Length: 235
Image (cartoon, rainbow, N blue to C red; front, side, top):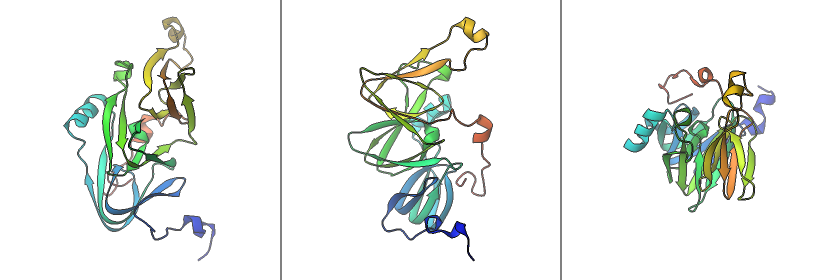
């Protein structure tokens, strides 16, 4: 059988070493020799001797997620084999986190990560109870983190002389050392007249960077995928 679909870049190759790599721009491949953590529902295929298990978030993270609706529903993939992760054909990116790094990421943009990384749900400072509170997942430690974006991301440097304002629905993540606050752009009179739709922005100040996607996120209905044959383990 022949066809463009069988070109080399689409073919799954045997792993050369354990760990995370890009299968292509829309999919991450993880050669498991022990364990990998992933968002529930992110698995699209696997081969080998692998077990999938819903992962406890810890009491603190569980309570924060129950109150805020934010955070990560995680699964652990254990054993030896290969597993492929993706999310609605979103663009996939691998970030190497070093021991002195701290990266805050929106939970919906997390795909999978090395078990050597630590994660905690934290309130975004300065956001107060805007929209029920803004909470993100903060990653520290050393290892690889795979994230997804709707379209090619924009990485914007932040400096003390040049703070950055971003749409709260388009922001993916930022250097955890940055100071954050919420700015309201429009008056009540403007809102009653319809407004621009850009009512609140997240203000980032300090030294670091912010990751923004060229999208304000999927509608809520589009994010609710069927559980699949494995009850939410697969996509």
